[in-house]
Length: 313
Image 1 (cartoon, rainbow, N blue to C red):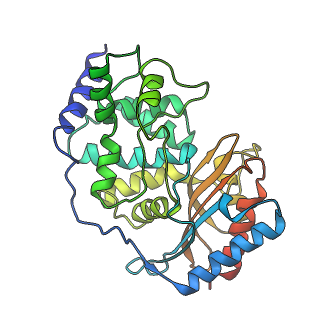
Image 2 (cartoon, rainbow, N blue to C red; image 1 turned 120 degrees about the horizontal axis):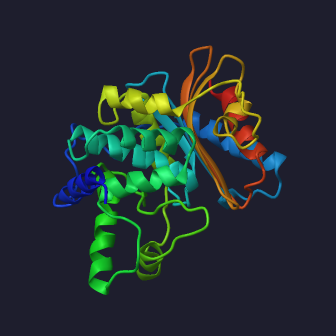
């Protein structure tokens, strides 16, 4: 094993001796105030999506909207905002934030290879880069099957990111699995069979909270929040002709002059986006939209975003 990677794993293992890393400030679970005004906007956006896509059921979409025109007093509305949903690649946003927390607390060594993986995980959404990041965060690696005692110890270590976010008051975060293309093997498959929950899960409220904290420079530190924002920045209009490029999920519905920071997720069953948007007229908001069983319907996310832009006054 590479000596530097071995050192990274050792540092991550030492982290597990305490329940969560150091936290610079206490953040309440209720990150923003519920707003009847924003709830109306969300309800109208969901209704518009269902009007345009009649087969879309209320139980197949979740939306959280956060108004950030006054960053000191964020307000939100949501539809099924606390519902746990398989997040696809949106989970990578949580691994990014955890990596910066670990780095801030000197639990990880800041190396070019780690930075390359963090960048590729967010900018290009590479699964292999995410595997590396999760390995160094948790002190675990993929490989051959383990004994019963060993797999229990391995799975406990693998839950380090969950413990971190639970310690911050996040209520519905399950972040302990690697994203796969062809599927897991060995101890990864063994753990799925042996332990619950068997998948990653996020809720749009928790996802919106994390993006809000990053966008308002409250995630880990101002400097690290800025570094995360640099990776999340998407060019508008999109130069990439790929209709499934990350910047198109919400970005294709935004008006001229808008700025976008986002992390999308897409599988054969899901199409999600977590976006922070700044409009030319000064409006700023976080919009998280998760959809299930309509992965090929790109327009659902567009319908939600357009209605939010129209009605958020």
